[in-house]
Image 1 (spheres, one colour):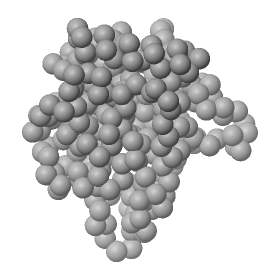
Image 2 (cartoon, helix red, strand yellow):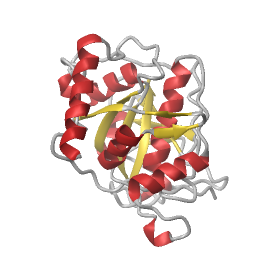
Image 3 (cartoon, one colour):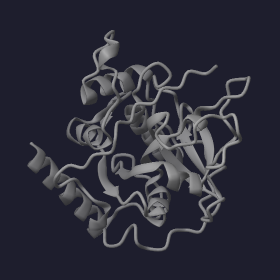
Amino acid sequence: MTNRKLGCRPAETRAGQPMMSVMRGFCARQAPPRLIRDHINPAPLMLGNDVLGDCTSAGIGNHVRATAALGGFQVDVTTAQAVTFYERSTGYVPGNPSTDNGGVEVDVLTDAMRYGYAVTNQSLYPLWGSADPSDLNGIRNIAAGLSAAYLGVQLAASDMWEDESGALAPVWDTDAPAGHGDQTPGSAGGHCLLLWDYAGTADTDLVTLLTWGNTQRATWRWVRSRIMEAHALAWMQLMPATGLTPTGQDRDALIAANAAYLHGAA
């Protein structure tokens, strides 16, 4: 059996939080019909999410690594660094299980934007913006243009089913076989993961998710069923080599939205 923890608390909104809508239709433009990245290894890591509910921190660390991979290099992120960020952003106290209660994604992202996410030899500061979780075209644009979409999902107990080797089902879908557990979204709990690529846009086309130090396939109809929030992260320090990377007015608008939010949240 493989240990896999959850840790994404119910989605919340904050007054003035940055929204992707400031970027002149970034999410509204027609997304690529497919995003094939099987030639690129995003190298996701567990980052403590097998023993702690730190998926919101692990998701940020793996977003850094996914962005770096698109640029042809990699960033070292350790479990200790991910756990330290989890402590700061959620109030977790090492050795006190009662404080291991996961994180609210918008608050975790706010902490990273304000204080940075420390990786080996540097601290990285994301720009971020929230998107409509029901807008799958927008989520595809986020993945295509900003390396991966940072999602909060409500996992069903059936999604946590393992075979005898401890592996999850090869594909997460909304019609799990009988005997795999409750298929109700949220019956297992909330989880933060990344949407990395997709083979098409039809309900049964497959997407690749990054979670628990691995890749996990799912259908778009599964994503639609489970998703509760969606966010974009931009690491300007890493200069991702993707065509839709925020530049010019788009970048300035996102920077202004982030700055206004921090000023109001101070």
